[in-house]
Length: 118
Image (cartoon, rainbow, N blue to C red):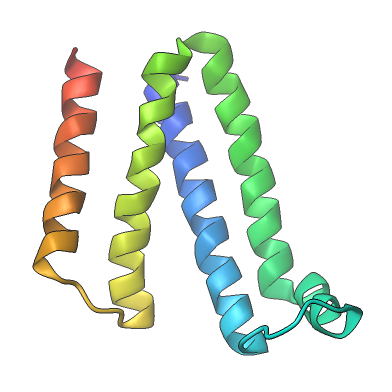
């Protein structure tokens, strides 16, 4: 399998993990203190568990990518998680998209394109 595909799969799992964590924590509500009473719902939430599993899978794909390519090549791809989360936040959570945020996402994508072609 192509290294870039492996990297992208890892990034999709990492982004999915964040999205699942957000859904889980939205269901739980604001955490105002750190105690067993607040930790237990997080640990038992199927959304949080699913997000953690996605993060674990992301790590496996990331390790495979690191075994195949230079860290200085692989690591900048993490920036794509910002773009994926930016889009998902708008579509799933109806979060606001401002022009500066949109501009930043476009700059990140352009930077990744330069990285891949360079």
